[in-house]
Image (tube, rainbow, N blue to C red; front, side, top):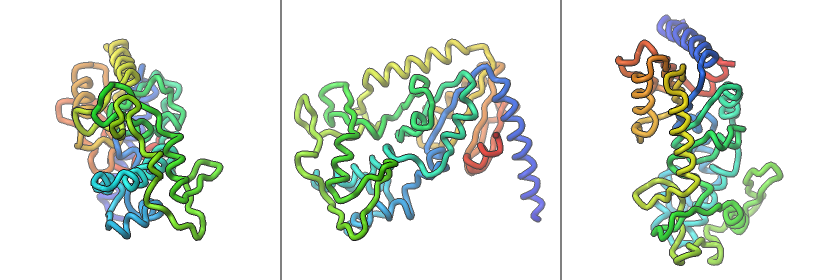
Length: 305
């Protein structure tokens, strides 16, 4: 066996044991979650999953992955645009992830005083059992629409319309909620005009409530969650808090990563933990109170049981 591999395994085992001890000892756990957590749970935007639900778009437009396709369809007619986005929304918001990573994370912290700050928009935390009043989705939600202008600061639940859209394209929805392609079905790459969403106030097209620019709507629910997060941090200041970062990359480090580093530095009893595949890192300033574990988050959580 390669000696460096053995050494890394030993280091990982020690770090996992230390993280388990810190979770047990913490007065509170603040989870900061990024896209890597959903990737570990099986929400992949390429490969078999992409090819299963978007074969027609791949053939016609040569889309290479689900994410970039979401930008490319913005130039298409509304019927095609929403055919693509309804599939995208349904499988990434209304279907459960293939793996139980979120449920395992919940089991790990459910008896603790916890709060979740996440840039993910797939609703996986709430589906796994996390208390919705302990969640702050900073970047929006696949399950919400807003006015594209926007003419007012309100969002709208889209589940009923999205279900109608995917059914109109020839898909079927199984009893467990999974989207399926009936054998021999010829999928339609468009939705009926009456299903294309328009703002109920001004009549302009609706769009996803995702933070892409300064038109992102921060509705009453968003502000209430932001206040609950702020209150949670204030109440636990000076206590033993574990800042547990999972799968956070470098697209928006100012939302989770940098604040977690800063709060760990400023709170003398705080501990920072970073679970990430190939990007587990902490600055030297807080290294003594940091636990960095490089690897698949699902595998790390399995070791924490």
